[in-house]
Image (cartoon, rainbow, N blue to C red; front, side, top):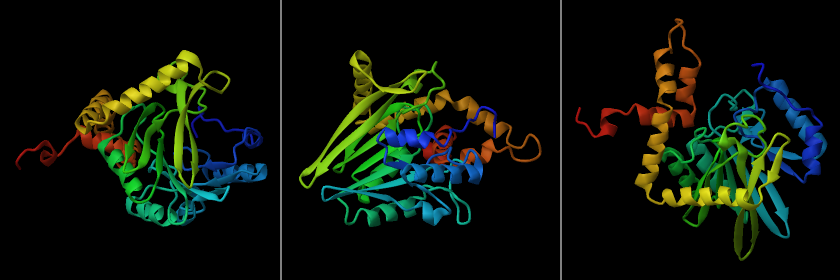
Length: 304
């Protein structure tokens, strides 16, 4: 592993428990940074601390299992899924629940039966982009159509925007929770937690603005909190017009064009494929950028 990576002490799981964390969704692109041993250690540490985990498993089938939280006669089901960025489980390999559209929609449709609240945690979206790609937006809406009440996307490392769709709530980017590096990047310093109160009469959602510092994470206060929430709502208003949302997405893609051009140019520079190139085609968020930058004639509206 690169020297920049560091692992947490097992005792951190006890800290999470003391903070009131009862369940941990592990479907993310870094859960395999230290291989099978690291993943197994994470499971063991959480279980020892009394924290239930979901979204990963010894293989793809096991990783697909959700978690059910029951309280006051009500049941919430949470299903965690991750885009294809290195860490995903396969038929014979442990890892995160990979986002396979047909399977995920089938899972959500099945798991939503018999629960009072269905939440999907979708670890995906392009890093540093505050707006969803057209594909991500379609995928999240499809999850709502399949039975989800709330879809939360992570991975972008910035607070994005939200929309209400078909009675459901979609959040495109919650930002960072506790990410103490990259403090010079404004996107890295804020995040959103979502509080959900629900009963047989309905549900109420509220967003809690967070800020990170060199010591950890705090609930944002005063003007800082208002700035986070104002930006969140302003971007949410921008995506009501889908053409405008697509234009904002395309503008972002153009800003990262050099990295994707370089990946294609250097793909076979050493006679063997460099990993970044197939990764850009494997991971949904990167492929979204790729397809936007390098459109086919048909997508451009040209005749053949």
